[in-house]
Length: 184
Image 1 (cartoon, rainbow, N blue to C red):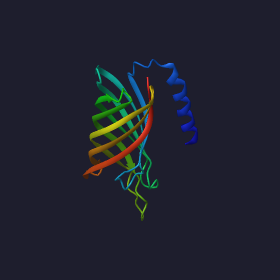
Image 2 (image 1 turned 90 degrees about the horizontal axis):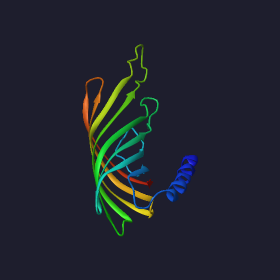
Image 3 (image 1 turned 90 degrees about the vertical axis):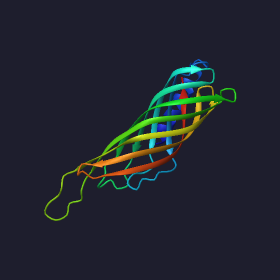
Image 4 (image 1 turned 120 degrees about the horizontal axis):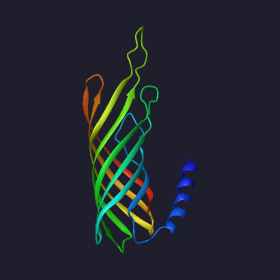
């Protein structure tokens, strides 16, 4: 983990001085969730990239992709999972473009595997668990440098989980994320 943080800081230092201050078409960030309502998986680490589609003065529209890495609390029975969230967001810049508030809507999906514990003579096969739903993500970015920002957001995932056995359930999860990123 220490190597990842050092690499991320080095990337910031090289990119921040090499970029034009006026254009911020791409945003790349990493964040960690401080909260999670999930009983099976730990708090996720997420990575995202956004591309600015259109800008009007202090308002812009962006499309992006966010990925979540969930590690299992019970690695014996549940696999780690990777979730994806394609989204679209609207942002408004204020305080001389040092702050950015945004609101994003997206679609969330992931896939995990449940490995049953062997009991008795027969062991059932591994089962696939698929989750999909919508995301709502209001947030705030503060630019500490024209190309480096601190990001915080509240992500609501309203989803349905389907098990290979045919059972399904509604799952809602809320993440309070904090992270950092670079704009270029």
